[in-house]
Length: 293
Ligand SMILES: [Zn+2]
Image 1: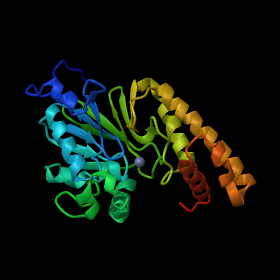
Image 2: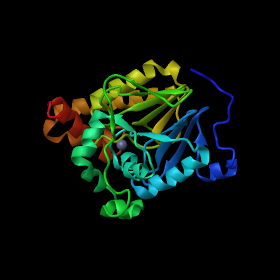
Image 3: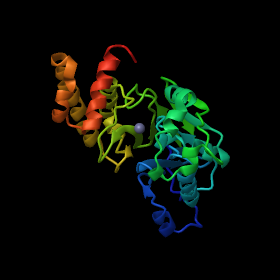
Image 4: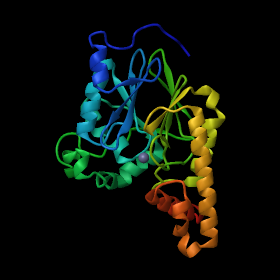
């Protein structure tokens, strides 16, 4: 990997404005800021010729705020990637397209989910989410826009000019179409890793998620910092803790499904997640193992 001493931020902008916009620098070229709704982590990786936006927010308002923040750091042309199809990560695509972004990456599973059932993501927006136009499907930037470029099982190397990042699908996990972004020693993990909150299982493949976390910790010497989809940046030890917690949860859920098939929800109080997540975990474990998904 090429290293450079060049300052990647636009000289015209003060670091105070960058901080006020909520940016945290997590690497030489890597930045993250929290956007609403859902306190989602939106990332940015700045090359010499273009910059990669990681996740786009939930509609034109969050995408607009993010774009404004991005422009404090770089004037370069932008490429975008959706780590998965959930509304807080992908419904800002159309607004970014309106601002001139033409290249959007995601796993094929994410493209299919947005293409075939994107309105389900829109319907998850509540009044409190602060995206009234997106919620009403009215106004500029309010279409559900599936990404234009697909990541498959082979990693995709994106050249940002003087810096290469890799988009990888490590398997089904939080959704059928999760993509992680590796940039030097930084890994943007999307919702495969959540810090400060419970993992969300409503579209998950729990057994495969465990394998994906296993892959991340198997290559942990490559990554100094892992940026989760929500919460603060973690290290490999914390991902290891996530792995063990999920392994334990699957074991408990397994026993419950085997012993009380009619009422596995009895295990919810002993699962290491909240009641909603635990219920989803049980349902998804049962359905994925039955081959229904
Ligand atoms: Zn998600």
